[in-house]
Picture (tube, rainbow, N blue to C red):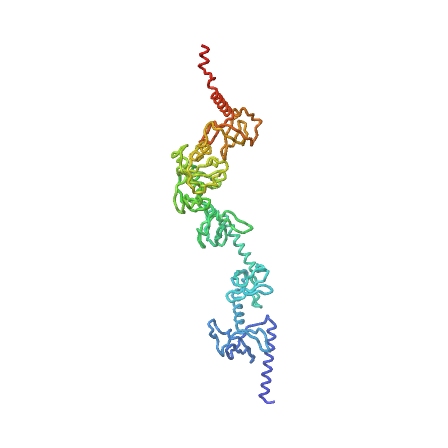
Length: 556
C-alpha cells in the first residue's frame, strides 16, 4: 500500500471516530456544548461549516444574515455552532441555537445565586406537553402548566405575561418561571399596601385606569379600586365617560374593602363637602330659586342648582298646559329659569321644583275673563266616550254628550274631530274643583221648539205610551219628541190600567222650547170636549138660552 493510500485511510478513520464522538455527545444532552466552526463556503441558500477533524455540516443562509438580508459573516470566519442531530451520517448543526445557548448561559451567569423571585416579563411563544415556552429579551424560559395560572380553555400564545424565576438548571441551560408565584408576591405586596391605605383618613390621590358604564377603576400606588357612578357626584348617578378620561388624576376616599373581589370601593364625592347640608339649612319649600336646565328626558327635566346638586322638574310641573308632549317644547339645555321648590327630601336626597307655579294660574285667568252664561267659540282638543273637551281661553271645559245634542243617542266623538271650532255656552263653573261645564243646547233648536212651530196649546194630539213613571206617563208624539202627562192630568183614565204601547189622545198643555219639554193633558182634553159639546148645544137652542141676567131678573 502506498504512503498516500495509507494516509487517506487514516484520515477516513479519524473522521468516522469524530462523527461517532459527536453522536455520543448529542445523545448525552447534559454534555451538549457550544463549539466553534469555520465557514468553508457560502452558497445561495446554505453555508458549509467545518466543525473539526474535517467533519463538515451545513446551516441555512438565514442564520448568518441580518434583518436587511446582509451577510454577517464571510468564508473563513469562525462562528459558534451546536450539534442538534445527524442526517445521513452528517452532523446537523445550528449557529442560531448556539447563539441562544450562549445568551442564556450568559443570562444565567448574570443572575448569580440570588435568582429566586426575580421578575420576568415576556411573551408566550409555544405550548408543549408540560407547559409553555416564554420568550423575553431573546431568552427562552419554561413555565410549567401547573404554575402558569392559565385556564385550559384560554388561548395564551402571543400574550404578554409577568412571572417569577423559581429555579435555574445550569446543566440544562434552562430557567423555570412561575406566574402563580408572581401573583402570590404581587398579592402580598398589595395586601400590605391595602392595610396601609385603610389606616389613612385623608383623601388619596389616584389615576383613572379604566372607564365603564357603571363606574371607574382607579389605581392608587398599584392598588386597584372602583368608584361606582353613584359615588362620583352629589348630583346623583352620572355617566363617568362624559366627565373623565384615562390617566386623569382624581382624589378619592376609601369606603370599604371587598375581601372576595380583593377590591377597594372608592368615592370621589366623599372628598367634597356635602352640599345637602347647605340645602337643608338654607332652602325651604315654596322658595324661588334660579337654576340651569342640565338634562331633558321624556318624563321631565333635571336642573342644576350650581352647587353639585340637581333638582327634578317633572313634565307635569313645566306648564299648566296638560297636553305637553315633551319638555323640549318649553325648555332647552343650558337655559336658566326661575322655579319654585315644592319638595325637599334630605333623607333620600331628592329635590323637586315647579316651573308652572311661577306662571299665572289658567283657571284664575279664566275667571277674570268669563262667567256663566257667556257664549263663546272654542276648539275641540280631545274626544271621549262621554263627551268632548273644548279649549276656552286658558282652560279646557267639558261638553258632555247630553249637553251637546238634544238627541238621546248622539255622541261628540261621532260628530266632532280634534281642531273643530264649536260654539258653546258656559253652563257651570265649579270654583272648588276648577271645572267648567259647557253646553250647546241653548244655541241649537230643540225638538220641542221645532214641534212648537207646527202645533199650539190645546191642539189635540195622539201618542204612544213610551214609559210609565211614578209621577206620570211619557207618550211619544213623533221622532225625538215626547210629552209628559202627569198623574193629575190622566183622569178619567186610570194609570194602573195603562201599559207601554197603548195609544192615547190628549191635548197640548205646555211647550218649553228652551228646556225641550212638552206637557199634555187628558183631563184638559175632556174639558175641551165638554166645552165644545156645550157650545154646540147652545148654538142649536138660542131661543131657549137662559142667561145669568134672566135668573137675577126673575129673582128680583
